[in-house]
Length: 261
Image (cartoon, rainbow, N blue to C red; front, side, top):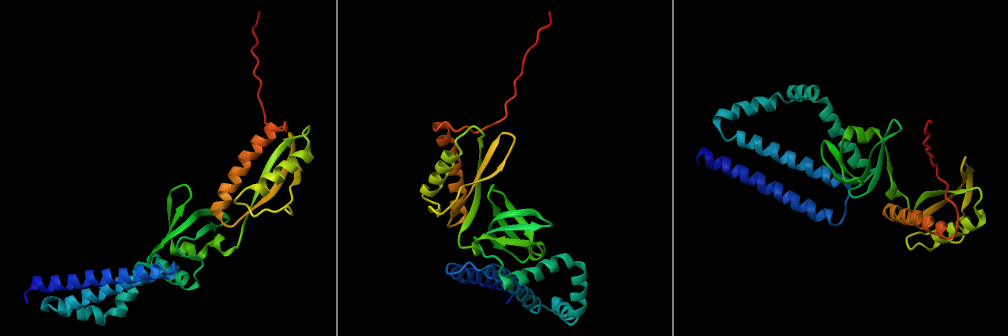
């Protein structure tokens, strides 16, 4: 068998093996979206490539001795590689830690905080050997190294059964507070996506220089419903308050023109 034939066979084996691995993990992924599946798939593909490369090198006299030396010097090579790629290796180790602990899975909504600052928020779309891909709600994809994910505070909203979100609105001091509270309560309870019941309370949470702040909690099954319900309720409050003559105060600026004689 000539050189080109051997190379062709090994390349075909690698391609077919990786394709079969992808099919297997795709089938498993239909039943579960566990984050460790993505990481394991990447690791298996790399192992297959390394084994195939070494096996191919063993087929030729010119590369057989080199491959044996590399194998025998594995400890030294590993030490050098570890020193040269500390950050990359750290991401791989963190990826293993994340796949074992499973703080989040694919298609789950998470918020990533580091030093009290939100660095990413959205849907987990993929986890590779190096990084985690998060599809943010503004349409951007955030690529976060696994080492950062492993050390950051991850808030997983899928771990909570229901989602609560505050809605506030300010009314003027001259407005009928009881009437405004009743309207706000009715709108929140009647919305099709809310879990609010008659037991939910609307409170006067504070004063400002312009009026009184009314506040309540909107309860929904998930985060998507919360976004939509809160938006609908805010719009409905503006419309209903306007119809009922309840003032929503806002600052105005009056500009006067003075003409000198």
